[in-house]
Length: 99
Image (tube, rainbow, N blue to C red; front, side, top):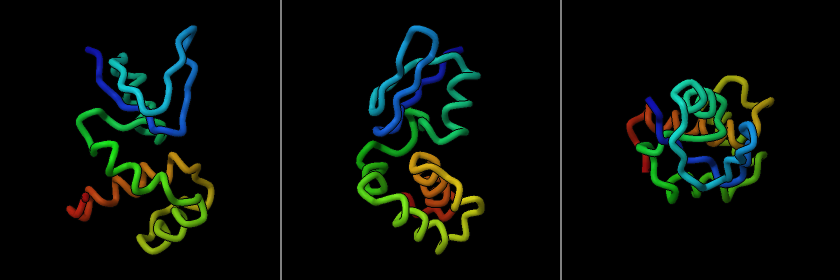
């Protein structure tokens, strides 16, 4: 069953002949959708609205790492911007304070 995902704005991924562009919503096979979400390249389309994600996209990688450090997110020093955003969004959900 296909899953709907929203690509993060700064990511473009080649999937066979198709390119998945940042900010767009796609219906993808379940395994691929889960992989993209798990690696921080996309979020499920039923998750935070793009305006919520954009609050993180406006920050630099160093600024995102500072916030991740404050939240004690493991592995932050080697994360990409997309991975940091995904980790911070997950942290918001865990804290119950998603904006």
